[in-house]
Image 1 (cartoon, rainbow, N blue to C red):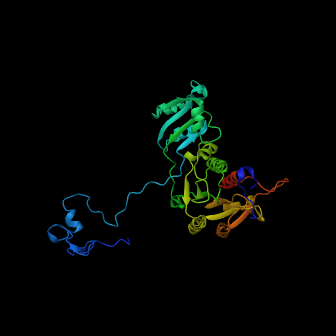
Image 2: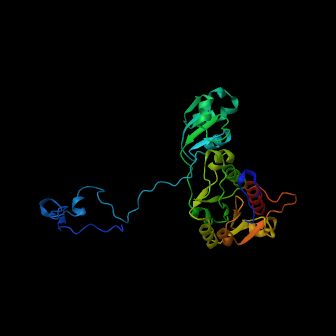
Image 3: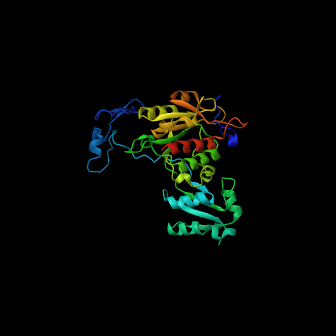
Length: 314
């Protein structure tokens, strides 16, 4: 909603075959033939691997997969770095502090936390730090760490005894400042997780992490190939899908008891609002009443209002 930061919520919106048969000669490039193995007979993979542990891997054995991550290996800003150290969710390799801030009491807690966690602290020239920074105002502090891990959507939508899922999904938010602010509001309101599409959306960048003020360390984020399909999965689990759109007739503040059930609030972005397929997956569409002269709110402000309205009923 609105145009602060660019994101809005306007409603107008092999076959792998098995090994070749053993013992059969193979044609060489000149049309002749040569034996497949020594002595004229081709050894089977099983016989070649005899006596060597792990020499053969079955096609149906699981492969070790690299954990999925959201980015966020560089963290900037005092609050973001402080929460990184407090959360201990991921390994921190090093922290840079501008040399002109050495001995500054405002950074004592960061230095103390780093030492307690055995994280190296380096005091570097301000120009060097600002050259390495990727956000507008790193506040003289920068950290490098392992990337933020993704969580599976299945984990977010699973029901736990006495607790219905409370989720927020963003439909193509590409402004990093807005996503960071959304994550910060969601963490404050106790949202169980945020769902973002893999494409046409920003993930965790230094600007997102700084705007989130540490919320990226605490709010689980699931990245899905397509948001419409993810919303359909949620509906199958009995989660209500509520889209926000300025053109809706129903007010967000009329959710009532529905807000206390499993719910996912969906925010549109960047002028177009909710995409057609996402809108079709919603159980209902609500608007935030506007009593002034502007037509809409920034998407991060809308996210804060919606998250706390749902929390109020829970």
